[in-house]
Length: 487
Image 1: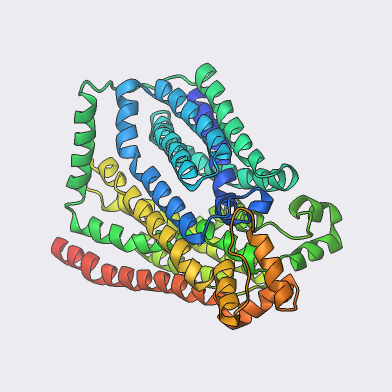
Image 2 (image 1 turned 90 degrees about the horizontal axis):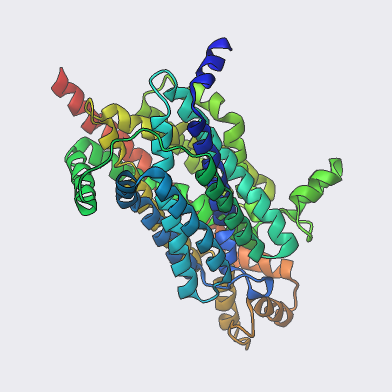
């Protein structure tokens, strides 16, 4: 205990300021991102935008992929013009873009403003990580980055809780105001409390700095062992991101969460009121947010279990568990089983995700750890892009409730106006239920039994299984050859 307290005293004020800014930034980002799939696709009656699943997937996939690629440039900007200056610019862009996105209604306008949000996030990301690195040393870095990772998950958990409750009380616009307000706090922190950490000023012209960064990335990618691993891990990130891209829509369209609400109400009406909606349901984002809650509670325990495993073995085990969890979550319309799937998913995530970063650091040649770590964003970016495709046109054709109902209406020869600004998704579902002589619950059950939208779990889990087999082969043939060559 004394040793830990001694380490805590070594952290300068800027370290704690950076972590506080990370908490509010994650609060803002996940506060929006956890509900974004719902906001983009739900009926316009609710204040949402009523876009198709394909439009949603394209927007979320491409913009988030760009976000993970931009730090190549934004990191050079920070080194060139200073951390504090770029933080203030990042937060001003970030906050204003949240407000603008909340006002946008057309697909193009929402897309462009979401790109601005991604720009603000990309300006911030490399600075906060570099600040934590520069305010820790060999004796404090392990605990320092552990604190940082914990803060990321706390912010990622708090944001969706607030956005979920606020949107059900005040409407969708409050989510964007909340996010902008959280970033506005960071503007004050940067202006008043943030002190520029010691850094070497880069004398190179800006474009030369970018070229050098790209050149370093290409140098690292000349290592076939690294490249093969990064390509394989695209599969993991493609499957992993379905938790945020697709599961909220799947829960909203197909899963009965009222049973969970009434079960909670049976032993605590106060808790049921806190986590439930006005319709005695559990909001999809609150269900998905259990993943972050489980990580906060169990990350240290899971890390202690896998710490003795080799990174690749831990990653393989973790992806196997994630594949099971994602399969359960998407394979049922029972809310309790969805929670079980999310819990299993989180265990796999805790086992594999930290080991992903650790492994890249381990295979890096001495004094090239930072260079290799810079490549870790590449599979995340590509995985986000591919996740958008699966969550967009693939989900729309296989499992989207709106698309399946439109198909059923056409098959039966029923005459219902097409969904438009004047005739919303909700209007369409009500009219379809009337013509089919059933209620909304009966309509959902009929579509579930007829079109089997839950089969999409096979696709998601299959991606995980293919990734596992690829990693096993990688472990045998690529790493095996490297070990033989070193004997």
